[in-house]
Length: 472
Image (tube, rainbow, N blue to C red; front, side, top):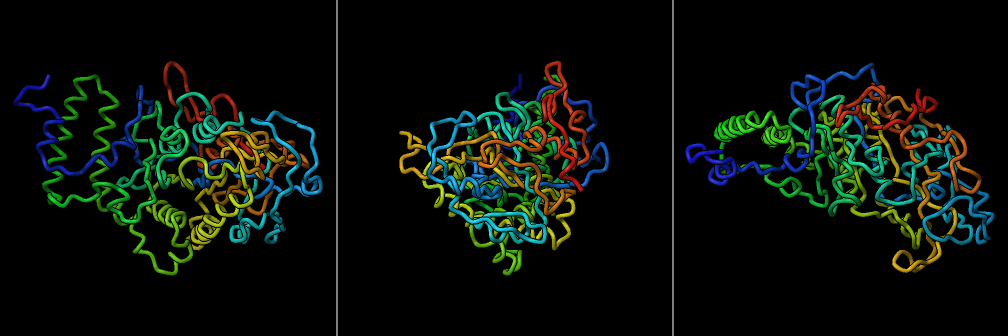
């Protein structure tokens, strides 16, 4: 019980001019449980992996909503021949679908490798020899919410730590003045919100820091990033006092991990004031670089992502927008064409930029959604589709691609059947993808664990195999 002499922390903050805001707190407060068995020396202190890995950092380009694999990276000429004709239903779909729906987009062999990519991505296609296209991905169910959680957290039901949280738990960050895991999504949260980048039972410092990237100015992108009322020395003195009060409060409560997270959040917020201002100020980039990425929201996101990665942020996840923009139940051709037009040039610019700077060698780039789409046309359903010419969800087979950091470029792994219904060759579950990503970072996915509720948890639960065929 605090006395009048020892005012409460809330009262003290209300009466002081600290002015930092809680810009790091919302991202770092999770529900951490028991402490792990590591001497972290700070939750985001840089640490070596279990064995030498090829990847040091990662950017996940999440095409939320489920882009159609048969319209992007998995050509199906047989489907085109059967266009408009009824097909046998090989697998259960979420809603009733109709006749075969041949792709309205043309595919061509690209690069020296001849990887076939549709004309939706002409700029990305120029980097075909750097891409490893996995055409045999599988998820568990044809629903957005559980598939978002599976892709991001390795489980479609339970509260589990996200991939970015596991990476920072295992490796920390290379810059203590920035978060280790940053999430960019313009216009608000995507489906299932912060659960996509949660830390769950890992310490709260490993949760993703969310940015609403519809804003251009640094002061609006990160609220309270500057303190116009206190000089740094005075601000530091106030923060030191606040830290002592918080530590006293923590120690009286058996080392509460929630309070430890709060302490760390204030420290990170203070350190971010200068570093973040620099990282998010795109005006520091030459005009030709900004033009290469494009003066669009998605282009700005990827340029900011590159600046964060080269400054030591471990993982950046980039969303194309809130909700499920790629969820093309209606008018797939215009939906996919417009979305691809938004991201094609920026993604190509990112790949070229990383390569020119020597960063692609140890930066893993991942592109894809939570599942694919049916090769058949969706029948209009009240509340879901009304105009037709769209596709339903398909978790039985879809495509993703990876680039950089020890991945085989110009390579196609696995296949769906001749119509694109289901993965049939070298089937790659999301757990296999996660196991492979951890392997590239230098971790055995079965041994990167955290003790919680009497069990050793891991990202891949009790499944997953490293897909060695896609590695160099």
